[in-house]
Structures are given as C-alpha cells and as structure tokens.
Image (cartoon, rainbow, N blue to C red):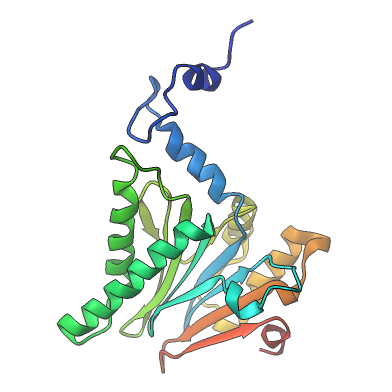
Length: 239
C-alpha cells in the first residue's frame, strides 16, 4: 500500500526545518503553523463608511480568569488596533514590537504611523522566521485595522508574512465560512452600527448554539474623531 505524499515527506524529514522545501514546493512547517491559526479564536474586521472595527470572540469561559487580562483586541496606537488568531504567546511578541514601532515613529516624525507601514513591518518579521534556521514560524495570523487621515483601512498578515488590504475579513476558527458569508452580505455603504450588527449575525449563524455574547469584545474607531471605543458583552448589544 502506497504511503500518502504528505506522510512520505514527513518520513523523509522535509518537515523538520522551516527553511526546507518539500519536492512539490511546500514548506511544511509553515503549513503546520497555518493549521494552528485555524484552531484559534475567531475575529471579524470590517471597513465602514464612518470608521473601522474588529469584533472578536475571546473564547474564555473560565470564571477564575480576570476578563480584562484576556483581551483579544490590542491597541497599537491611537489610530490602530489589532486582533490575532493562533498561538497567543507568539502574538504578544509581535504586538509589543508593533507598539514600539508606533512610538518610535511618533518620536521620529511627530505623527501617527500609517496602518499599511505597520503591517508591512510586522509581516517582514514574520517572513524572516520562515527563511532562517534555528527558529520556527510565528503561529499567528494578525488582523490590523486603523485610520489614515480620515480613511478606514483593514489588513491581514498570514503565517508566511504575506499581507493584503481588505474591505472585510475573518481570521481563526471557521474562517472560510465567515468569509463566505461576508462575501454574500458585506456592502461598502455599511455604517459602523450596521456593520457590527452584520458581524454579530454572522457569528450567530456560524456558531449556532455555542454563540454567547458575553464572550465577545468589540473595538471600533470613528473616522471623525479617531477615538477608540472598546465594548464587551451586553454593551455591544446596547450599541
């Protein structure tokens, strides 16, 4: 009985280092890291006519955990927020690097860093860890939302260090299903309130009986005042 190709590659050691290509052109350690990302908790980000937001499932149900210590959406700078899916410890390293870059940019240029420049810098770091020996890839997909001038922007960087700009996107568990529903229902004319309602409806549809509003965290930035607003649980429903 013939052994499947992926098992052959494992047996031959092509998955032992991030810088080793398999005969069919894959980097297996990177693909393993991508599977880790799809086990992570989900987030939906969306660009709206009056701002941008990220809605995240924190997936923390342990009553002993202090809720504020389990935030899923991070402030990078006043104009930028980010959410992650995958290994949270890996994500913390990237988030802290992003925060330092934002402060360095402020000191050097006396202005807020652009969201695209930020995602590019973080993506470069992630790419390096798919190329050099002695380290494994970051098991993290990062979604970054921000305001540049008065324009809302949303980016997602994958495990490989590649990134794209999006109108709406999802990362984490069931991301394919989330994206399918976003393609069907998203419209560029959505306001923040309507966009947030759409994101919640999509979570309800995908998660079914597992949906619990108290597990969710929302951060949005309005284009006019560029102020971040953070809401959790029932506060989201009131909005």
